[in-house]
Length: 332
Image (cartoon, rainbow, N blue to C red; front, top):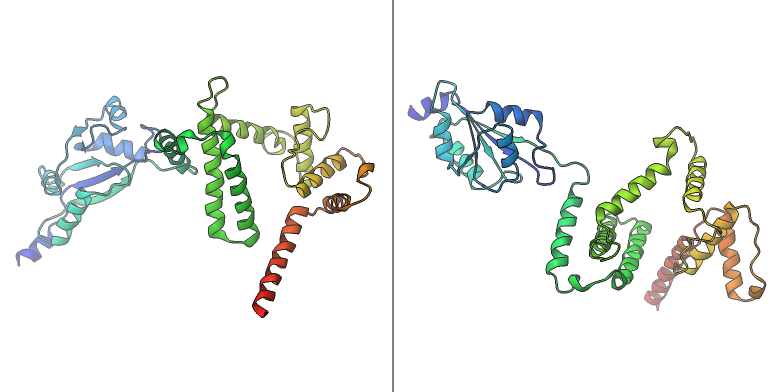
């Protein structure tokens, strides 16, 4: 009888758990969140260092630094009037913790007339927000890890090359899980090098400078997207890119900027591509009239003219050759 009567009592009041993202600047809350905060009967926050507190108080929101129990909040909601009160709890992160557990236990007991319970995200992560976490973690590792704190850009080069090769392998093998992991490893190298660069006494730069530079470059080299030029085909886009790049670099030779430390086949194909784009028909050098080197160079030039990446083609063939060796070993 009593349990049935209790179950029929309408909800009294409202408890709203307001969550925010630490990856969004404090004070950037949604309009429903601001409306709720200004209209609530009570706003409480257990964390005196919550990043939102100064901004809420500046906006005229009265926030109590208190850590009420679930029972106290439920009683507070029912304290006045038939409709009860609205109590907002400013939570940290996603809002889990002892309070939500306590409210769940009370609601499941059936012994208490519960207020309405609501979880309202006050701010949302934008795409790429986890990059902020990566930068923060890298800062901590650089400061506190005995190995990471001693690394230089020079000492990390071999790791960067290894990660790029592992990324290429994941792509060529179609391994989606490995692709995600290897992209993260390459991204780590970018953030690591940028973090080291901040410490340079003469020419420091940060990961924000790195990101800003590539954003500016992408906008400049895509006038058909961000400007008034037009491009309907991939070839027209490539022409835009090469023309803009040439204007920026003002190089004396088409070979400038080609890294000589890249794999030899890729280097040969890159040089052949630069020459072809410039309208130059340059035969292999006389001193390379004979030998394997000339044969490989000619193959690389032929592949580039045909739109084939000689490195990728050779890797695919080498992988097939590896499989054939393994098959031969099993058959023996």
